[in-house]
Amino acid sequence: MSGAKNCPETPRQRMIGMMYLVLMAMLALNVSSEILNGFGLVDSSLRNTIASSDVRTKGVYDDFQFMYEKNPAKVKEWLDKANAVQAQANELDEYIKDFKYEILKIADGKKADKNALNIINKENIDAPGEYALVRGNGRKLREKIDAYRDFLIESSEGNEAKQAMFRTMFETGGRKWETKLFESIPVSAAITILTKYQSDVRLAEAEMVQYLKSMTDFDDFRVNKVQAFVVPNSRYIIQGGRYSADIILAATDSTRQYEYYVNGSRVPSGNGRKFGKYEFVASKTGTFKYSGQIRMPGNDGNWRTYPFTEEYTVGKPSATISNEDLNVVYRGIDNRFSISVPGIPAENVRVNVNGGSATKSADGNWIVRANQDGEIKVNVSAIVENREQLMGSGVFRVKYLPDPKAFLQFADAGGIPRLIQEGRVSRRQIQGAKLIASYGENELIKANFDITSFTMQTIMGVISNNSGELNSRQIAMLSDLEGGDFILLKNIQAVGPDGKTRSLNPITVEL
Image 1 (cartoon, rainbow, N blue to C red):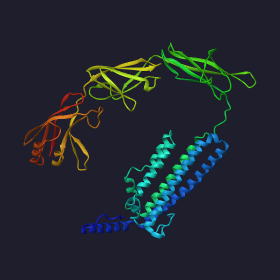
Image 2 (cartoon, one colour):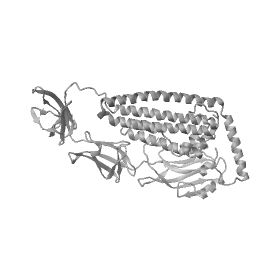
Image 3 (cartoon, rainbow, N blue to C red):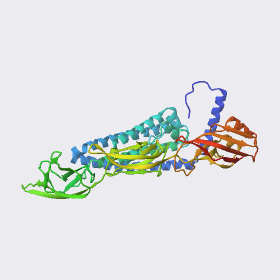
Image 4 (cartoon, helix red, strand yellow):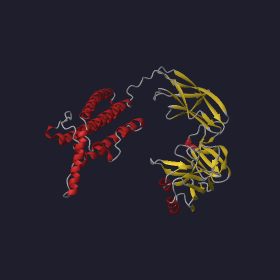
């Protein structure tokens, strides 16, 4: 890969340039012909995949056109979107095709194959980087792929599975994408990678067009049965709440008048007489049934009757309050609670705490924090019929956090952090170590503790510290120790999020 020179080269720069050329030549020699031919086989396979995908996609477009001719009012919106997908796919496919040809023009000169089928200088590792990186075309390609991906995601709005697939297929990862793909790689590999993206473009087009075709509902079944349905707002009602249900008739005719009856009494119709409206205030608990009928005039002037039955349950106000992690509440930390009210949407549930606070977390749970000793009371209410109603409460004991254990934390030879309370350490490890307070690997509670002071004792003397890390005097003392000497860390004090100061276990290590 080469670029324009901004200033004359110094002898040192020329020497480095020569070394780089020699290195690149050595790398080129190490790429075997079998590997280069392997790229050609993969490229050929990808081209066959593209050809097969094109045949299938053409069949879908033909079906789309046939559907449009049969029912233009219903299909036009989706056919227009499919045509837009086709145009975007064709544009990106042509751009990638030209991209490959420009690389080959650099590698093979006038003998470059416009269709990239016959590559002469397969092992050339400069041409891809020259065209993609030096000339800036890699960035343009990435931007076009990003634009195509965003277009597909926008066109499949509402279908999260499709959107996730398109994000994965065309994930470029930012500015380093073109460097990873084109810097110092053989021409045959670069061409194969670009063919792979052409294949992805066509596969995404096929997926998108098939999805748009399914959205037309062209193959709907004909209605051959008329049936009455009851659609309640909820089959579970809180005592004092309101029961509401829509009574509908499938395959209705908007030009006809319908009548709705429940338990022998006629109920009003709603939404332009498209369904009956049955509602009442639930005063008793238990499970109840009701029945009724819908009457519809026939073409012969006679009324036809369609019966229905339905049941509902009325329950007393209740709430489920569960501490997700423990059976007590600890001061100073977030205590995760699962709180719900049967039959009530989560957004209509309210929580307040006597002796603490409650906030809603992103995962739908509640975070409860205690600010007093003894006990707290968690009260749960719900918005029912536009008013707040108490649903239940629970009392929880409040405790201070249990004492953690003191550990010496340092990095082992592989750079992996280790926690020990006794054992052997090297001088380098302990000099870079620090004291931490933790519940260990099997912790049930997550809480952060700060080491406020400790004392280090060796055969050389005793030095105190007001932090969790060794001070300069302690580090200097370690320099005078020999292998086999013991180091005692004691009088370790730590403060947790509950504000309580603890005295922790001593730590003994051997140098």
